[in-house]
Amino acid sequence: MKELMKRLSVASGISGFEGEVRDIIRSELEGHVDEIEEDSLGNIIAVKRGSGPSIMLAAHMDEIGLMVRHIDKKG
Image (tube, rainbow, N blue to C red; front, side, top):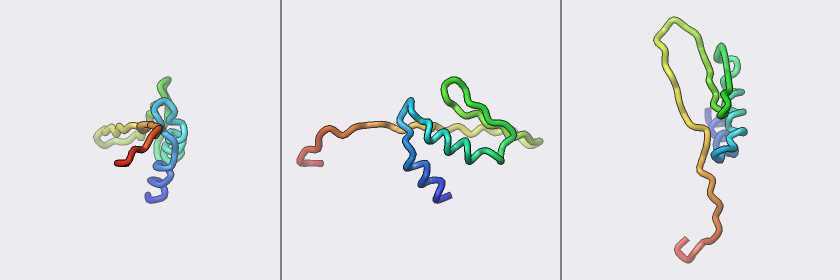
């Protein structure tokens, strides 16, 4: 889990350019779910079939992308 968190933290995931994060998540899901789809917006939809109650896990893949242009005396 620690290695996965490190990989996700280092991967570029600026809004609109989440490809690196998407690839990591997709590779982690493979072998654990019955079906993986990607929609036209780049969302990953994974399905694990079973007889228990249905659940949905939703999370975002993007991060805020800012560029520092100036640092003043206060930081």
